[in-house]
Length: 69
Image 1 (tube, one colour):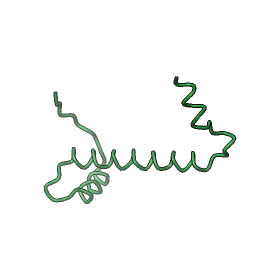
Image 2 (image 1 turned 45 degrees about the vertical axis):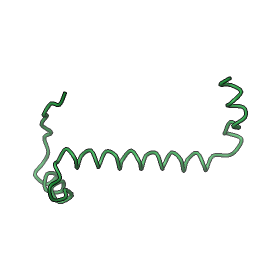
Image 3 (image 1 turned 30 degrees about the horizontal axis):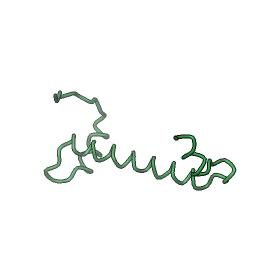
């Protein structure tokens, strides 16, 4: 079920959002796109952090598999 909600913004923020919006795109679609991009950036950052961890801090795959069995 969909419900319309109001999100108060300053005039400046509204203008910036409007400039980001593609022709024919709704603000809901724009906000959904921005949320998706934010989540992807967070995931990429977390993946970088994991790659940079010392191997001693990581649990070997075989050990994880054994824990799940």
